[in-house]
Image (tube, one colour):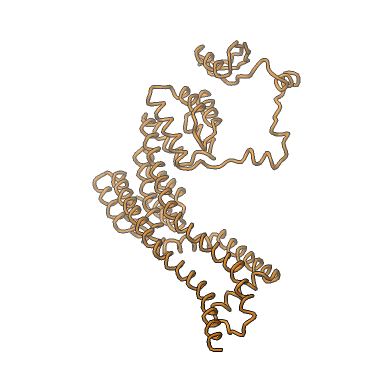
Length: 427
């Protein structure tokens, strides 16, 4: 039977040490909890070469440190989980707590559940922090690469109000709704992207494989080629010339570098965000998505007891558009000065009048979170309609564009053929 050395604390804070004969580390942790202790460290007393080396040297061997720097970086690189992954994690934790499990036991179970995008070590570290006396929200604050300020503040509000399970469930629904909106938006873009890709490949195939054969055929005849054919032959010759191709690549690279620098500058990012809101077809979809995200986030925070100024600050940080960030920053300043929320929203001229009116009604009735939830439902429903309309508009537009491209390619081949046939008949 394996042996495990442990160090734990009593409820009085006294540190105790000992050894257990159990099957594995999980069983050791359960045994320590049955003794009424809070485990600090649990390590195998006997093991392979690594454990023996640790006992001889008194230090732990970090195998990752022996790897090359590039490999260590790829192994330790962390990414934020997707909304769907965060929704699944939150819902699982809420279900375990709702079943009556203590928080530490629920986090221990979470470390064994499949939660894609969130490593099991996260749950283990959260459990360790909670067992050492920290709150769940403070423990999550140390995992900032996983949990955002929005998440942490909502958990803190749930802990303060004693309704952590309800908060987690509402948060899971919140992330699920945004994940569905993102999924619908991406699905609407799949068909246009595929059509553009097929069209691009078709044009390249025609220019590099079909057109040279027709060009060789026309060289033996004294036929003046029409302008569509001459244009395509010029493009084909330019792409086939290595120096011309290098010049094009360098030109594109220079433009890309300049555009990248502009996009990274504060002025450039603001101009791009402003331009996105004014796009002819996609602008309305982007605006609806941003308004729904603002209303849903602020409503969820206020419903869970987060103070209005803190909720506005978190919502401002969450918003991806700088125009809306600036409007929310100014609104937060005005609310600090004692003004209502509807007044600065109206003065910003960024938010639609419908949203301002509903927020004003919510302030008069004392139910701003409910009014914002109504706003979010309204814009999310309108967003779905607009996505379907945009898809319906893009499909025939792409068909027309593809028809023009194909027609141009066919004309560049058929027109010289007709000329050739006419010259032969004339002779």
